[in-house]
Length: 286
Image 1 (cartoon, rainbow, N blue to C red):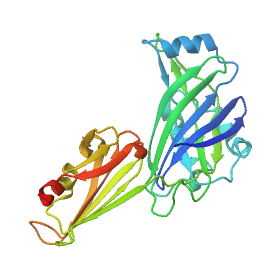
Image 2 (image 1 turned 90 degrees about the horizontal axis):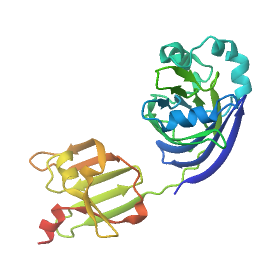
Image 3 (image 1 turned 90 degrees about the vertical axis):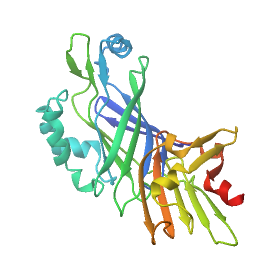
């Protein structure tokens, strides 16, 4: 399902590689390799990575809708600032992250993101991360311009509590996400009552719209919705999702239209979904 990207950016003694990406209009998942400087002791870092008493903090990542700035440009403009920052202390570099020359290209209205460590390969001295970013911008999407990532150094904390930044400067990488729609849609309608259901399903989220039905609220509609998988499993949407947005219009007790949308807790392979079941249909068909 992922786009093969394999774009590499050499940033001094750090090399970033975006291996894969999966994008919708507002959300992108990335597999990112962070190749560390040769000065990082591989045996020591392997011990930190495997230890229950030590900790390896992932890098901070900030996202920009631009492809116009290279690492060399960034270093020329901000290299002196980098040297004054303590990369083990967020309070030291947080202000820089909001004042960088890249900031005018930050997604309007910002967004939310998360970074998860996927592994460490001591042979190549490379840490691998799974990244997610969701923009709240109304005017920008993931596929309409190059995407630039500003990545701070990872930090290792050994069993004694000593923190060590694994590089001494940030790194950036730019690539063009491909917006490949993996969205499925479906419609059901009762010919007599004109009761209609519309469903939109992507690996990231589900949206259901009900017209002339018997749902009072968006929450009622979500509680009545389940995914039917090709292996026969039927799972309520509430168990697979987080967050709920929706609306209703018309007079109670049954508004003329009710809808909801929710994001999946984990990516859903839509090729394994056979149907979306709205449980009230069982009652209607009877």
